[in-house]
Image (tube, rainbow over all chains, first blue to last red):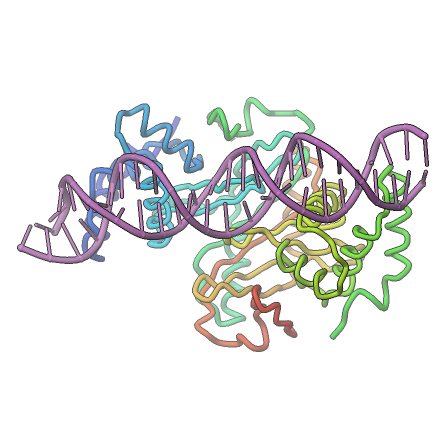
Length: 167
Length: 167
DNA sequence: TTGAGTGCAAATCCTTTGCAGGCGG
DNA sequence: CCGCCTGCAAAGGATTTGCACTCAA
């Protein structure tokens, strides 16, 4: 399972420096949280609660309040992307350089999600931003569908059990 | 300001019949809520709280609980679309036949939204659904951008004041 | 040293739900 | 009539915040 760890040690340290440069303190809590996202398989996302549970398992001893505060901070500085799958809570995923733009399919029946890559969507958004004189920040496409109970094991991610998958 | 009212009286009555046929009761509360969405300018969306306030102003005397229950019902039967703009609450808009697929631009700075039409996005989603053997239900594209404080009066919708606009 | 960051618990906000009474079909 | 719907108020769940203490720079 490919993850960000092997290739991005440098990028991670660069990010720490960047954040310090922007006046943020690089606490062990923030570092732990960032590391978890870097070590996550490509395209996988976590809710605040899931992240907090992982931190607990690692004995990182980070409070839920700090988890929420850190997620919010990382979103505001462009390190994480906030996703909404029409559930009662948000999900978060890493934004890393040289990521291939990807988007989400959500099964309205079973609630699982799958990712797919689509440079076309990105191009389209760039065209629209140019037309409308907007500074493009992020693009998110959600396809709601019924997966008809096919391909669950291979393509879809189960949020609550954090099952991994190979698209 | 174009709205659904003039053209869709029949569609509205047809919908009532359809819902009744599906075993739902057409109460005055449900009718009032549906009417509000039909009378809303094209492409405009409401939060539960905004909808409830409009109902109050019209002396419809509908409780917040029923407002939420009805929104949820209409989403589940495909009458309304649930939107998320990374705020702390959802928004809802009417899904009506012969609607031109439209999507949303959200200004990360001021929080306002604008709609734009894009048949390309729809086509792309249909292609992906076909490839992956999914039954396509809905497509939502969100473009996060900075509007640089331009065109607020003409293109962007202010959620909380429900200011209307002409895209 | 110092004020940004943290943990804890209480608070807040949005949304859901239990229950008794109301009314659509 | 029957049982789906409603209003009310209380509950629930996710997220935020006040406060005193800690520690990164």
